[in-house]
Image 1 (cartoon, rainbow, N blue to C red):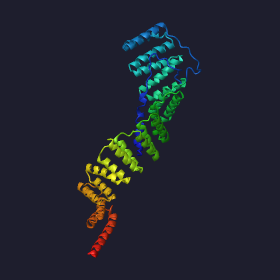
Image 2 (cartoon, one colour):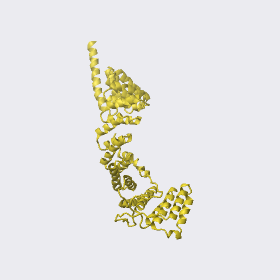
Image 3 (tube, rainbow, N blue to C red):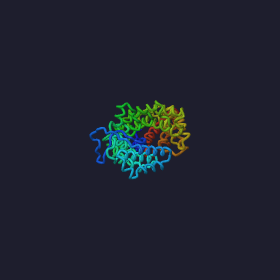
Image 4 (cartoon, rainbow, N blue to C red):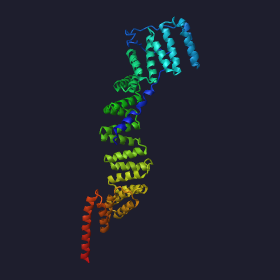
Length: 445
């Protein structure tokens, strides 16, 4: 069941394609942030890492900002913006200190974000960051929010650039921040930067005894596969089957074993899926049976198919009955193969399965039914190998001591180059037996 590389790539990367779209944007109402801030030259304004005292707002400005927030929460964002615009009148704005100006722009960002006006939100946050001597918490919190807005805009380059600045000044970043960074680089196809970020997130989550989310593993799996690092892909899939034992992950793990030419492990994985009742569809069980037959386990394949038909999972089609018959035949269980071939032959629109049925009867030395099945095959027509059918017919007729009819069958088979050699051998043998039989008759008469 080794899968083609192109198909496996599609399977392994399909889920991860939408991971970055699953970023959760934090609330931005009156955001105060978590850490330190950056300057345009990417050097922290707080490089000495001294704690800066947070200023206070003047009472009138504080009341106006609360009024704007109340209007926005009441659904009147136009009035909220109007209040903020009044606060930006030069006579008022010029009197504010940098913290008061930053908070005014922070409220703009909050309201524009609630309107899903992301361009205006970005502009407002950039104005927050332009203010000198910002409190550390407000600066870093604004940076992180700005990076998230860039994600919403699908401006991944700006998103990761902003987030990288945030990392330079943030204290003890959590796993989610590294996941955000990894998602951004994933969208930019920069897997060499994305992978370390996601792995760092996994490391932090484990250290802090937090959940390592399924999507994080999916992101790693997709990136390692794109890099053709099959060993790492394989390790991630093993983790997924352990942490999130879903059928799709077991299927992908089995496919990876096939890619790595580890047939026994591939078989064991698929067998475990079957034992766990994870193979619950016709195509899955049929594929499993074919895999077993390819790996010299025809008896097991036959049992799987037979059981699947009894459980009404495997469809009772001519192809599935034929597969079941072939499995029993390869397992040298010809008596069990016969009912399967008979069912398949009745459903098929060609005579090929009757020819297979004839071979099964030949194997159990039921010469009459073997000959009868070949005749049914010819009557139904559309045979892929009429030469082979004639060889089987000739052998059945020979054992019935119908030498002349057997010779006719082998003469027809001889005309096809694919059966010429065996037909000639049988012709010599049958003619010799016929002549011997005639001589015996003469001697007795």
